[in-house]
Length: 257
Image 1: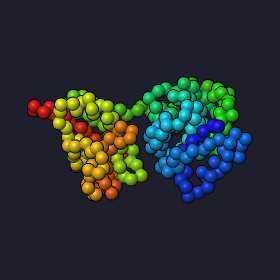
Image 2: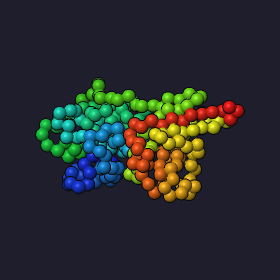
Image 3: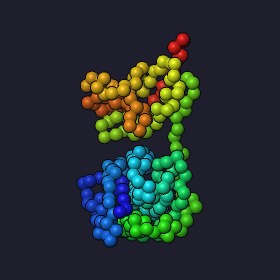
Image 4: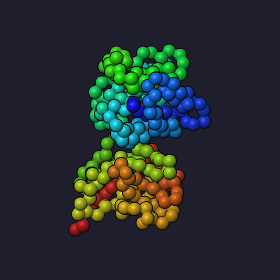
């Protein structure tokens, strides 16, 4: 049975999510439809890419991901279907494909023009159902030789420091950075370190929240092995005055210095 995930900036106040899901479920394929998130900020491609990018690899290969971010723009801009890391993505050509993975898409096709209407229901959902029914990606449309792409922001690292930034603020107000555990583990060996963020700093990586008193700030590596800054029982985003793209710097010093 095919799996279709659904991510959008529709929110849950209106009927948009239900309308698209009805189009998916009122079909002969009877796919399993899994909501990833519908609380992406309107047209926020970077946020959608982080949320979807952190989740899609947990699903089986050949899962179909319907991503309706700024999808009404599909009446003016192309809607594409792409294969990335063995998964299928249906999305407006808004740069999201370039941000969800470090790998280039294996194939990209241009879906038929949307015209007027509800793009997610009228164009994206039928394409997802065609894939669920066994259609090949290239049967959905013509090859798309060029798609919109953004450069992925990467950390800058050397023996003295790692320079990264906040790339996502989660539901709890925690600040998730793009600094990976792997880089930190290598560069921090036999060194002390100071983690600087805004006007605050930390000299300790928290291994468990049981070490942290309510109201205290902590820095840890989360389930994605990315550096995360939080305040136990508080919202780090508000209390620290940091947000998306705020710099986070780790300074290293040899123990002998």
